[in-house]
Structures are given as structure tokens and as C-alpha cells.
Amino acid sequence: MGIKNITVIGSGTMGNGIAHVCAQYGFQVALVDIAQAALDKALITVTKNLDRQIQKGSITEDIKTQTLQNIKTFTVLKEGVTNADLVIEAASENFNIKEKIFRELDELCAPHCILASNTSSISITKIGACTKRADKVIGMHFMNPVPLMKLVEVIRGYATSNETNNLVFEVSKKLQKIPVEVNDYPGFVANRILMPMINEAIYTLFEGVAGVHEIDTVMKLGMAHPMGPLQLADFIGLDVCLAILKVLHDGFGNPKYAPCPLLVNMVTAGYLGAKSGEGFYKYEAGNKELIVSSMFK
Image 1 (cartoon, one colour):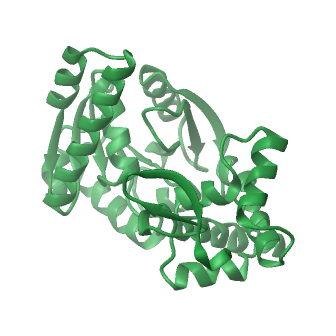
Image 2 (tube, rainbow, N blue to C red):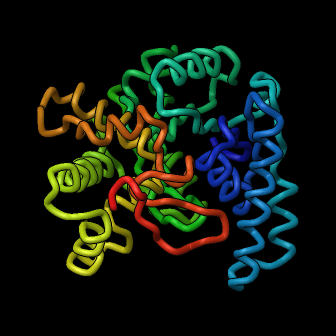
């Protein structure tokens, strides 16, 4: 079975990036979201990102035009999945939301259709168990920003078939990505290693060992990380970091994954990082300079 039509569920940061790359490499894309305003915003983002690629000389005007023509938007799930060979769900990192979506997809999609989740930590086996096609349920964890980052973590659930795995590998390669197969355990590989590092950086701040700027500088200059862990946490979203740490903590029952109380407090207070305007750093429109939040000065 060849994959020609891809439906992306959710038009936020990850969803619009996934739709962008799928459309750019010739797939017909249906982008689905409950809000038309979110879809309009997603198309503006895709257009801006394509313009950036033109400025860098990596694509032509013709590719931009074709990419945008390859994306159709839908607010009704049933209409968006009619022709889908592959669905990639990129909704909120919340099991209850994903469970509802996958139950609906199982009812609405053609029998041959593969159901993939862009989850960064939730069990693919658990998601697959919500459907009657667990062999066709798989994880496709793209990295942010999707048009730039080469990796796709391909997560096999307990019942995922070899055929499903091979087809998803094939699609990932057509998107000029490098797929890496991992097994289905909490946090997979990327977040099982990354999140404890971020959490430890927050503990280092919380315990007064060093300040925000100092912690990030040590990791950038000492470990050659392109971005310090606290800046990266702000970029990912502190609420997302907290949700993933909770999945790790619940999944393994190991206290080393317990989220730092400072992280819990910041999320409770609505300081979520770049998307809310403030986290460990303060973010102002048009200002690219890193300004440490006044909470930590």
C-alpha cells in the first residue's frame, strides 16, 4: 500500500509543521482543527516558514505555491479523514483527548489507514488499545521546529505490525527525515533523557546553586548545547515539560523523575515560557535578546 493522502489532526506548533513538510514533499494534506481561526493562523505560519526557506535558497517560489496547494483545511473530522492513508494526530499531550480522537478515527477511517500519534511521551500501546486496529497504531514523534529538525522517533506499540512500521519509515524518509525505531516505554528515548536534564537544571536553580543565565551558559559553553536547558524548557513550554515528567514519574514510579516544585509552581501561576510571554526568561515581540525573568533576578 502506498501512502498519498495524509491527515494531520491539530494545527498548533507541531501540527502546522507536520502539515508543512508533508505538503512540501508531495503528499496531499488535510489539516483538521475544531477552530477555523486556528487553521487560518496555521496557514499564515506555514506561509511565513516557506518564505524563510525561499530567503535561504532552500526552496523556490514554485515549491511554495505547490506546498500551499497541497494543504486543505477542515473543521469536521469526518470530512478531513475521508481519503486518509495515514493520520498523524498532533493534539494536546493529554491521554483523555487522544483517546477520544483515536476512538473516533477508528470508526471514521478506511480499514487500511494507519493511525499515528505525535505524542512525546504517552504510551502507544495504550492509545492502540482504544482502537480495533492496534496493529496499525504507531508513534511518529517529530521534533520542534518540524521543518528544520531531522529526527522522527518511530515508536512501536506492543501490537504494531512490521508493515505499519515499514510504511511509516518510508514516509519519514520521503519527508527527508531520519527515522529511528524505539520501543514503547515512558518518554521513549528523547524525553526520557532530556526531561530529567531539564528538571535537574530547574532543581539547580531552585536550590540556589546558580542563576538562570549561569546554568544555561555552563551547558552551552561547557557541553556544546546550542540552547541551555532552561531556555529550551521555555521553548518547549513548561506545561509540556511538567506533563512529560508526570508521565515518567507515574510510568516508572521512580522518585528521580519527580517534577521540581518550582516547575509545578510556575505552571500553576501561568508562567509557561515563550508561549505565555514569560518563564525563566521574558519574551517581548520583536526582541530576540535573552532577558532573565525578574522572578529570578
